[in-house]
Length: 132
Image 1 (spheres, rainbow, N blue to C red):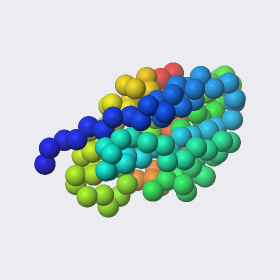
Image 2: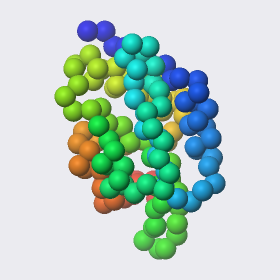
Image 3: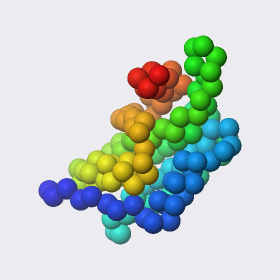
């Protein structure tokens, strides 16, 4: 099986750039998926004012983070998850396209989870602890 690396749809690149510099302070998320036929990373859904619990329920990411000393930051997090039960070629397409997307969106906080149930406030805080 050869590794297929998908391009990121141009309109999604623009949306990710705007998302990266958004001024709102509520939690928001952009859910992306791969169009298998076009071999493109495309927009699946956008969410405003969403909690991690709500986002977890939507899965087949800004996040308000209050530090231990009271400081508040709004880290932009990319949480990568390939759907459970994907065919091996789909898994490879997801994995192979991740770096392309991270580069296109200029993301620095990239986390991966294999199980959507792991996506909790505690899990994300543990991931973000590295960036303090």
